[in-house]
Image 1 (cartoon, rainbow, N blue to C red):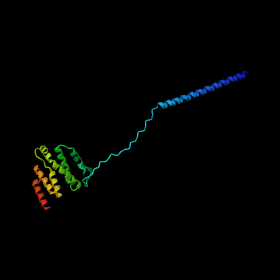
Image 2 (tube, rainbow, N blue to C red):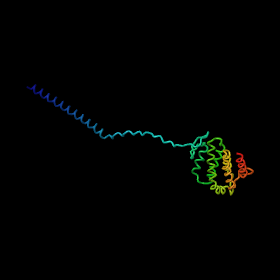
Image 3 (cartoon, rainbow, N blue to C red):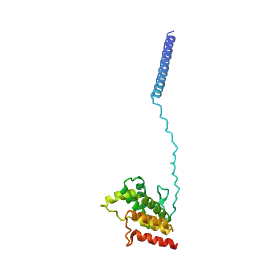
Image 4 (tube, one colour):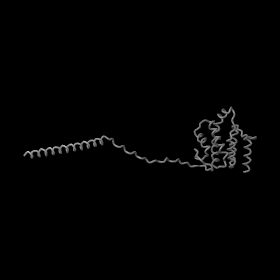
Length: 208
């Protein structure tokens, strides 16, 4: 009887020990699970990847050149192609308002393009800006005269423009340019001046 009681006591102890271990293991497992869930809940949501926007190429301005020459590079405000050395003065002229400054820019453009007038583009530019200069000279003359000490300087635009017109057989227009130069009292640095130039143009016109 004593042995049976001893065995029962041992069995109870074993059962209690196993139950204790089982409950402890289950508690640890639940604790880890809760900690993992809490960590996942507290973590901030991942930022969405930025959207990639398609690059749109800027539209190219359409320029229709009206002048086609052998030494074209950049488009002018007129739509004509001009050499690099004239790009800056042409752009500056479009925004310059001072009469004397405009006169000097005109001379820079016209002198350079006149020297290259065998090129069709340079020739057309020279004619365009010469015409502008001549038409605008009535507004330029007074401040230019004042800036030059009371006397107008030599203005090559008139004689160069007259030469261009005469080379193309436009004698009436060339003569008119000479007459306009004479009204301003300009000198073309020749012995007979614009009066002699006009007379020669009239003779060329008669022979044409």
